Each structure stands twice: as C-alpha cells, then as structure tokens.
Length: 85
Image 1 (tube, one colour):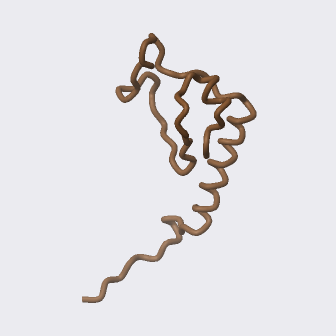
Image 2 (cartoon, one colour):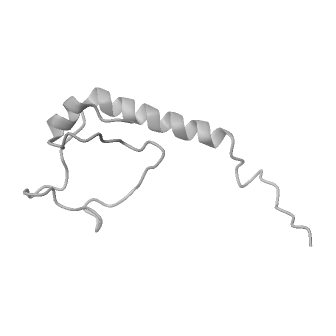
Image 3 (cartoon, one colour):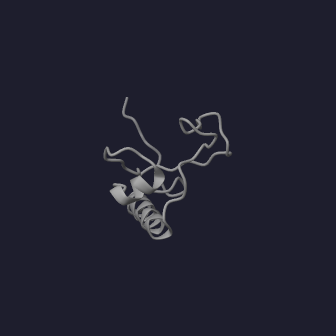
C-alpha cells in the first residue's frame, strides 16, 4: 500500500515512493535489536500515521490475510502427504 506524499512529508520521509507491506506483520519487543535511530535524532520512529490512513492500512492487512487463509487448510484438517516410493 503506497504511502501518500502528504503523509510522507508529515513523517519527514524523502520524496521517493514508499510502501507499507500488508502481506507481512511482525511481533517484537520495543526497542528490539533490529531498530535503528532516525538519522540525526534520538528517536527510533518517524512518528504516527494519521488515524484514518492507519485504519486503511489495518483494513488492507486484515483483508489480505483473511483472503489468503481461506484457501489454506488448517493443520487439524489437512490430510497427510503420501509419497510414492
């Protein structure tokens, strides 16, 4: 999902196109080893997304994952794989 230029300016990002990947999500402990400080500051984030855009991102994330799970059998119902020898 592309981040609109007005939001990028609000966050202090560059003018290049930027995207939020809604097909992936992570859980982690804040401040994790993989987070870096914003160049030239003492912060580890660029700020908050505007609430309406954040809700759009969440909706896209949920939709993507709900659609993908619909076609994937659960481990409880999946049949074992038989390999011919």
